[in-house]
Amino acid sequence: MQIEPTQVVARFEICRSGFIAADGKVGAELPAFARERATLVALYRSMVLTRAFDAKAVALQRTGRLGTYASSLGQEAVAVGLAHPMTPEDVLLPSFREHGSQLMRGVSMKELFLYWGGDERGNDFAGPRRDFPVCIPIGSHAPHAAGVALALKLRGEGGAAVAVFGDGATSKGDVYEAMNLAGAWQLPLVFVVNDNQWAISVPRAAQTAAETLAQKAIAAGFEGLQVDGNDVVAVAHAVGEALRKARSGGGPTLVEALTYRLADHTTVDDASRYRDDAEVAGHWKEEPVARLRAHLVAEHGWTKDEEEALIEACAAEVEAGSEAYLAQPPEPPEAIFDHLHAELPTALAGQRSRMLEEAAR
Ligand SMILES: Cc1ncc(C[n+]2csc(CCOP(=O)(O)OP(=O)(O)O)c2C)c(N)n1
Image: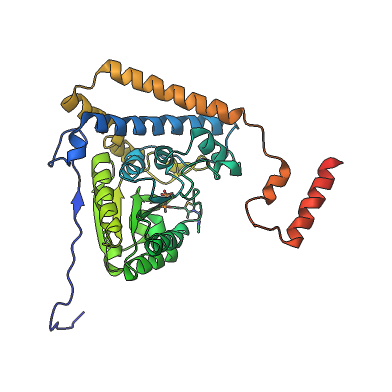
């Protein structure tokens, strides 16, 4: 534009952080928690377990024993990294690739399988009771997160809300509106963008002209930053700092975790129709599980025996979860009317009785 400025009224920059490079080598001074072997092994275990759960879920779907499933293959560091610094007082509002976060928060594998098997009991998990169920509509949980964060603030209970969604969700009105409220009301809320580069077949660059998704926070009046989303340390560190800030009254933060969806969008998608094998192969070289393993081997003497024992233990845990899920008798048909209303409206009550009558015939 041909307009002569008289003064600069705002400037901003977006910073990116990362610690462990794709080859496992350390590129920046590690935060204290990431120098402890036991902590890194725990993070590694959670990522390996998440990947094993994922593989089993896909196998169950392929054999007709699970519904449509959204894989988190390659995105384990985002899920595990964001859940690591969360406490029981915090509230997770997950999107549909947060199996790793949910497992770390205490949702059982059986419950996760139930959810993906179309059984509402999987949403009514025994714990953590305050966490929200998986949100399938894109970004519609962001305003809920603002509401949760407002409640936490008004009640003075401590804790913060953590809303997780994909890059595509940041183009939705719900997400903008939630960010605006979070900024205006200085809510204890951390937005995590699981930026896996694709919204089904729409590449990130085709759905927003913004250079970063983190800068969307600037418009809402709070800090946005990027992290290497394949580096679990970077995610855990950034979300940990954002939580500390949120809990101490410092308001919201947006953490954009740069990663890549190595799998199809869901089990009903065929990603080879819209993206190159070469692109995917390139991203396999960046993936988070192998990266942390390489780091553990190089810096913490992680052995082949330890690796084998871990893989075996995770496989056994997944097998037990899957068996418990498959052994669960199905819900009665009238369960479809549960969970929606405290008191069933007359019209639905009528439908419920008719259904029971027909089922009894
Ligand atoms: C409100 C709404 N509109 C459309 C859809 C269909 N839909 C399912 S996943 C998806 C893309 C989501 O992309 P992104 O937010 O980047 O998350 P990702 O799947 O990559 O994790 C869309 C449009 C939906 N679930 N909800």
